Image: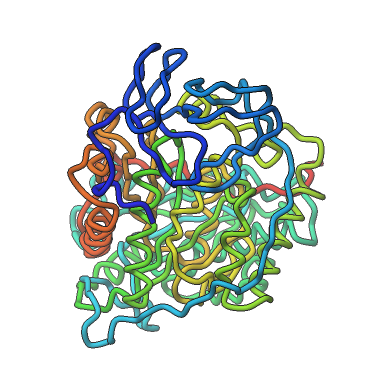
Length: 516
């Protein structure tokens, strides 16, 4: 892993690997400027975060960043030329998956020496980082009722007598009817709703359906093995007598749950109870240089202390998936990852203008990322350098410890929803352009890739990983800082997104089936 504290952080460019044929502009490089250490002169202005060719590239030559192929020269490229989507060709190339070849077990910290945090221990032994009551809709038709019940407690001071309750959160969506009644689309939706209903950060749950929808309350309860009780209640609007009566009864039910939900206190527990969903959004050319590898260093630390990091966003590991399969604990685990990649390529996205087929978002392009191969190179770094211990389908319960992968889209709300349903009790979110994100009932830690954006959006950013680029910290030092932020936030410390009240609208289950 690159340690920029040992590199030329005061110069205009950064060389990431001796074998690379491009370097990254640390600051804007003017036309005609000499590129120190590379014996080339910039042939035009190169914005910060973009790439500069350091040798002559013949059309078709592979372009190497971190000694990894991120595309091929689309034309002859002279030294000193800016290299970006206009002169990089995106095309397939052979990759050796070498399942498990580089597997090394984690060097675990002895249990007695592991880091701790102040967590909320549930009766079944699971540990929460927050203490919410959740209201879950089975179908969009009950969404308004769910929000009205939740809003009652936020706008009327309904929680003033319950200081240990972090809030009453509404989890609504656009699905639940007009969809396939059986098969993976319905199973996935129920799995997602069930994952939230069982999440340790929810002290109590109220599930509300309309009554005639395809995602029936009874079907959800049966598939997810949910049992009604004082802190898990259900309602059906058509049986309650309609909108007004359901809202009134729902408010009464939450009021019945609140005294019990308030009976919690934090206690010292091992960091092994921390599970972090890893996200990136609004990525830029510095994502793979600062925030993503720093987050990876924090996940390496967390794994040594017995915790778990969930890498996701399947389209955003495409092109570098072989760097993960080589670290897989077994061939079976590595093959699970490739099966998910092939499903995306061969079934789900055939002929579609989506990330996994090459193009990244306009914001990524503006930030210096040419294509999905280059974005994936940085995105995959969030998982650290440790062994890949398991691969999960969307919203499946995560039980393995260490570094794991969950199949999700790259769209952040959908991806994080799956991770939280799987058990993540923290989210760590890297961003270069400046993403504003929250995800109740789990706190989101925002990690900035560069100092100018951090300063511009400091109200939304928790950690400035731009210090690595500035030469003020190494990757490992920043990883330690992020790890300590995990412990602080897991202990109840507020994130910037929580202070701003974000997270009300980011529950977005993955819609993979047809609507009809």
